[in-house]
Length: 415
Image (cartoon, rainbow, N blue to C red):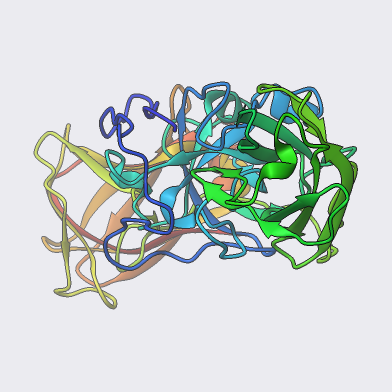
């Protein structure tokens, strides 16, 4: 089970993993669960943590048959409400499922290897579709701590056959195992004696599996058994290789067959852009990854519904010499992603001026001086000129030159 978040300088808190494993089929989430993407790209929120070799799914992410990217650490812990996979199966079906994640700084295919439990980790409670990615994944995607991205499920880019990792077994036939290197999530596992015809259901065991009450075919004196797997897409595959007693705990066992993707996913990769709506009846973005207000000196921004163009808007008293505010986003991005910044403005106090620019860590676009009056006026700031050659930015910065109470509405990037 995954442990603590690493969410950078803007850390919410350090959240440890619970000592109590979640119960199968009981997400423990409170309130409505957010929707999750499937074949189509959809929104995902990301944090990161230091992954272990095994994880809640109990397969070794460095195992030789796994894709090179997985062996290099491109894995994730899925938030508990979605532990049944994107296909809506039983608790644990998400183990080994793959997702294409598109962030601002890269796109990668990442495998589910762990669980982010709700207990002790409120960010994984289902308020927004969420991955807690391994630090190796965060590095590959260029994440900054607490990020938004786009994601869709994809068939895992595996080669060869599905395997078992033998987690535990004894001389009387008990076997506990995990399936790994499968292309599509595993819905059901069944087994039978090598010379038999009757299949018996395996049982979910945390993130893994165990044989059921009928298990004598795996005993020390027995000839072994074979498996039949059903994918989350409904494909049933009889695995021809027999598991015999000489396959010991800790071993990897080649099942001799593999799932075929029944969906035939087509189309391009996901793409992600920062939210264009900086403030339009509320700060743009997703839960916990939104544009945020950061004033300084005497500027005291507030949201109001009085006197706006429509809906709500920002009212900022206290602007003047040495006073202003940033509206900032957690993730830095190139200003070249957009061609202009649109907004409506007016002054409560009569004619005045203010300056607006885009800023980042060591990057500042040229500022534009705006004259404002008591009637609403619309502006379109040309970013192609003011931000030409500028590095990544993450803030809209406004500061006054004369005493001013400013109203802003419909502040948004556009092309």
